[in-house]
Length: 248
Image (spheres, helix red, strand yellow):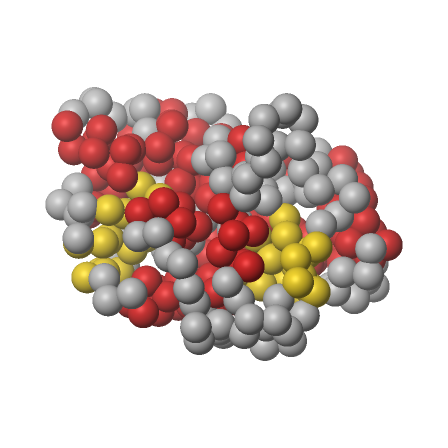
């Protein structure tokens, strides 16, 4: 299995350690993984604002760089959703369909593709709040949305349960959006800020100091809001915990 590793633009700029942890985690399972540094964006910012034609060149480049890999893994749930469900600006060739069907975030890769059942190197003896972002929850189906009456499951919770000493916790309104939303954060700043404040206040009310997620974008928003309002909160991208890199 040849794995192409995609680091999204915002992760590359703001959270390189999250990307490094993801890459090292994949290599722990002896996978043939290659980091493609020429690929810097999946086109989400343009598609998010309705500028599909502007995303066309980015999407063509993405297909060119990753078309030969069996599996593409990225350190972002929202980018996984973009590639899988919104890679629409280019002709739907066999290569494009291959990308759409075989791009996964790190949670899907570990849980669904290589079916990890142990992480003997991972230890984090702390209570950790788990935030399943909107895209990962409702488009990648990584856990059961609480509004659905279906059997309970959580891929993220299962992987974290393999970490020695870690106790999983949730906010009271566990599936509520934290207010990031990409362009929404810019267009409706006050609403986005209030949603973020509601989320981090919910953590504080439940005595949660550490928070993790499969989407660093949500973590970035939440930690910035917490810092602004003086709430003691530290976030870790999920791969940092699973790879044993998270330090309190």
